[in-house]
Each structure stands twice: as C-alpha cells, then as structure tokens.
Length: 320
Image 1 (cartoon, one colour):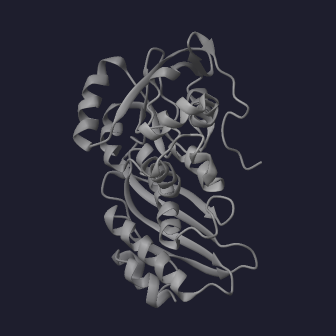
Image 2 (tube, helix red, strand yellow):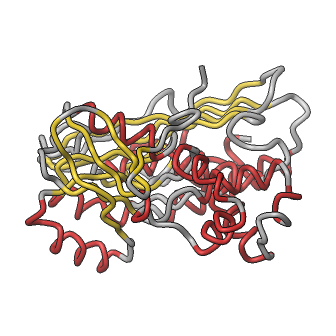
Image 3 (cartoon, one colour):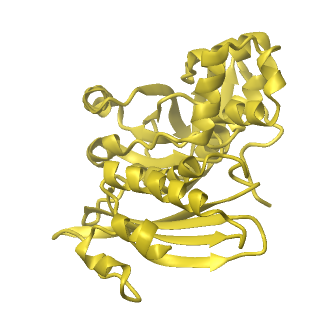
C-alpha cells in the first residue's frame, strides 16, 4: 500500500523514498522551522461518505492554513493514517490521489508517517513543517492598541455548509439555489488555505492566527494573547453571496456564521499606517481582505451590531 500509493508523494530527497524509519530535512539558511499538527476523524470532522480525495485534501489544508497564518512557507508533512480493516483499495487510491494533488500544488511533499488498522472510524493525522526567516514567525501575541483587525476571504460559509450537509432540507427555507448550496457545502468540505498571503503577513502583520473554531472564539484567543480587546463591527464581516441569501431568510443564522468552525481563513492585526500597503500586497496575491474592527485596551473581542453587543450560545467549536 505504501509503495503503490504514497511513495510517489515523497518527492523530497530527505524522505528517502519512504524506505527508512525517519526523514531528515533542514530549513533554508537563516530560517526557523515552524511545526504544526492537525487531523480529521470520520464522523467528527468529516462524514464517512465524503469523497476520500476531499478528506485527504482537507486534512492537509488544515495544516497549511496554520503555516500560512504564521507566515511560513511549506516544507513537507508527515502522515499518520488509521483505517478500518474493511477499507477498499479504491478508497486508499482516491485518498492518495487527492493528497498528492495538493502536496504538489502547495509544494509540501510527504516526508513519512505511519499506517495502522483501527476498529473504529478512519482517522487522518498530519504534522506539517514550514520555514520562516529566523525569529520572524507571526505569533498570536504582538498586537498594539489601535491596530486594525482584518480577516481574509469570507466568514461562516463552512458552518452553514455543515448544517446543509446534515440537513439538505434547510436549503428551501434558506432560499438557496444549487449554486449557493454548492458554495457553502464546498467550503465545508474543502478549505482554501491562504498560503499565498504568507509573505505579506511576515512583512505587515503584528499578530495572526487561522480561524478554525469560529471567528468569535478565535478572535478572543488572538487578542487575549496580546492582553488587548477588539471592537468588531458585525456589519463589516465579509460574507459570501450565498451566506447573505441564507441570512436574509433566517437572520438567526448570524450566531452560526460568527461562531461556527471550519472557516480556515486568517484573522490578523496591522498597524494603521501599514493597512494600505497590506491591501495592495493581498490584492497582488489574489486574497481578499477586510477590516472589521480596531484594538483597544482590555481583553477579548466584542461584536457590535446596530449599537448592541452580541452574545453567543457558544463562542466557538470545542471538542470538550
């Protein structure tokens, strides 16, 4: 299985063609290694009947999103794959094809890993490695009072897509057509990591993290790291056309949009004098960015809508 499906993905010479017990890599001269790990479990992060190529790509992209938020260029990844005994070879082949497609596209080759049998659901765990100039990794801490609060892309699509995946009948009351359904479910199934923005984050951002557990919860984590607070204008939070249609039909979905998970966008802070230059750099990278608030003294994030402070049933996703 390893030789047939995964050895072709191990293109880095330090992977030794997956014929050794470990890989050996070095960051480029003058750089630090950036390490991150994340994974998916069937029935928790993905559905058991999701296409295997999309499961593989989602698992890798979740890690690439973390690297992007730190300003890191991908170097490679390790894969731990736990599969039921009755898994079909066609499933493994499709999984490997999807993984290989993204590994090539993002320049992040397979370095090694492990395969196991499990009596439970399939599980995919990835540890990814990246590089940043020495001492320059963009951390959660580092923001200053008055910094602009910005996010990439659009927020809430994946959370709405998950609801539709669980109950396709919601598309009717939400007044969504086929294109809108495809947009939202597609964002849930396959994140769009913002690695093209990594170099601009290194140059301009004072702090950053990827949004995986919901904008409300993750902004709270980001600003607590700098012991600051943020006032966020909900009216400025970027939404896709499909999300706007759903919200127009069911305004109560705003709680889900702001606190649901799986966005895999980037939340960041930037000194006001650098915002214009950052916008130009983001446009050149093809990544949309939106300012949604400012930092102030205090701690945490306050979401304001029509002059009122919003409260959430749950600020963000948590396993426990």
